[in-house]
Image 1: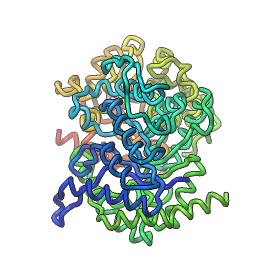
Image 2: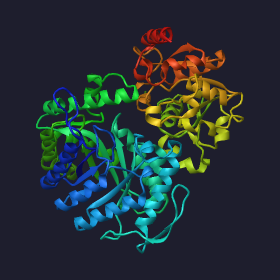
Image 3: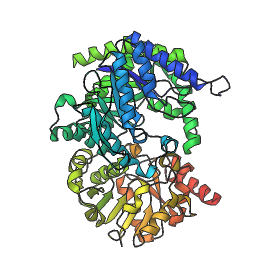
Image 4: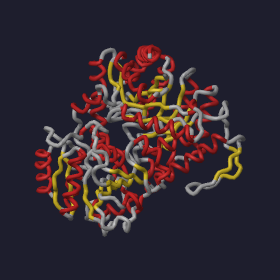
Length: 347
Length: 223
């Protein structure tokens, strides 16, 4: 089981609650990725996001920089909003990072995005949400699967490409391309049919309720003739690790509160309710907040349902102090991961 | 509620569900458990959904949209911006449950719903001119439906609001809601659907029947 982290960038706050600079957020994220590599975390994903409190709008740039300064950790987007980006550009950026990394550590996760900021920002029509995603993913796969560097593709949402070079080529020939989904059944079926690994974003409810979706994914993949090892499942969730459960709950709550206030203003949600937080932070809730023992046990519990090969956490939300993020990364790598391996080996 | 615990499988009427997303499949599972014959359809041919239905809503059957539309009750749970893909003719004369929401913050602006004084279900109802539209299930999260469903008479049972212009349609929908595991409360005409749309207290909360009645009164008085 791979253990990792992901982030949309998290802008630190002043004592009065006002936001500090977005540049600082990116510097913190870069430092966290370097730290994760040194601590021995398996994976770090940068999620494309376009808000002042979460400004990691350019995963390809950050991952290329991180590729140069890390040695072992796998790096990817979590996710790239492929609907409103140009798949040629996304591929080029990640293939460039692959070359810088020495090859084999760079992945792309293609998502639709649960927020809609990118549609007006890049001039796309939300009414074409589904069509844009399907077509852009098709183009990305056409580039990645091309036998030569030259690509030929045509569609309706983007100009055609007639036998043109898309370079650099990844050192290993192709990049791993994952499909991100928040739990829509047809997304699981489609990922299985395409034979692409699937990444479930589970940010509320009870994670084990995603088990039928993982089964659907694997059955759809098997029906389409894809091998078992090509059908990988990963889980992205919220969480934070601290030396004790009490500390983890106390450290994660203010950021959770801030994020919910912000989302509430945007989407008309009610004021954050501490009881909802507490419920989600206890098994079988969706937040992996706790001591290394507890988080490891809960990851292994979910593995019994999902059979996933990677579990990675979003920890830095709502102004989490950077030192708490770094400590959580250390604990994930050095305390949670060995416990997960040991518990899985006992099964 | 323990899904699949009932022995009276398909002893009730037929529920058609348009949309196999998170809301549609959650309602489908509850309806199967409650003993309804459940037919689920999307814009795709039935065969394309067979595996999804088999695994995600066991006991329901994947059908084409026209067959689902011919059910005793038809639940519409598709992204709202696609409401005009519904076959209004096929749904003519049917009781249609509108479980959709207009939520510009997450779905973007949709002109049909922006440039009008009508509530979202009234817009849908105007399009489905021959159907008897009842608004409900829009103000409960898909991931809350199964955990919160409870047998009639359970203390503190969660309640859902219904709104619609046709009294007999509302009565049938209320019975359906009750068998699925919730109390129901009649808000009045379809226009009252505004009182439990996104951004309202009712939309954001979780209430038993008494609490919901109070909330509804407050909301209708403020309107």
